[in-house]
Image (cartoon, rainbow, N blue to C red; front, side, top):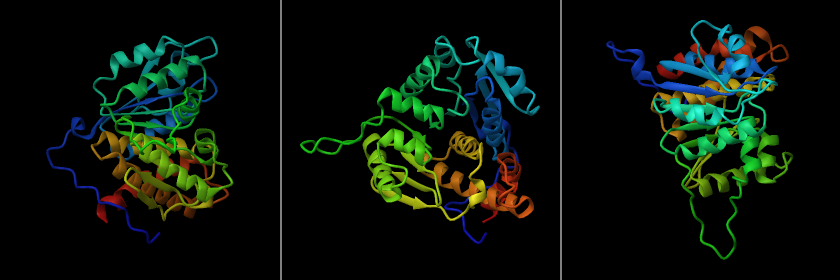
Length: 296
């Protein structure tokens, strides 16, 4: 645990109020997968977001709301299976204008309603966004990752605005076509994707690598194999979304978020062991991890 954070958080002013620290919307969940969006939302609070709202299918609302009393929730139109309906995307756009960041994907499924939500989120280029999990699978369905320019074309950067994508190797294989067994090939493709789309790519793994346009690359030094557990990535989504909402750039939010998330996993493993680690343990260790980032 001797790693140093990639940047230091500024101390909070004495006259601080919650409006200074961002309004973050988390979009996701479905029947049977409410834990992912609940943990992601609470993670955003645990690293300092002032206001956090979980936008979830109506049938999932009570379950997510019961997870923690500090979470605000917003019901969205859903189908009988507890998944976002096609109408949900228009509802979302109508009320997120006040957001300082949006994170989407945990527990969302890849259905027509979710695809439409991701389409709308791609169009909200003035709001920082994090896309993870099923939002990434939706990107693959939508054809977004066609990032390799033809040999006769000059390299270009498309205008996707402030956006962070956080694939694990399997999700990145679906996005890029590069095998999850080819780590070096995936890192190279992540850099190409970052340059082409003008976004930050968090390629999760051991270790996690963050790439950004203009050949920026950063390798994390925190974390451990015990973090390879269901829900760990959902916690990371909330952490990065929170830091974006607090005003950090996508590059800084991604690097610091990955570092803090990994340190939380290291702290939790001391008490829980690596084999016994679950995502909720990482979540509970976030306050100490973010405190170390502020004190470094």
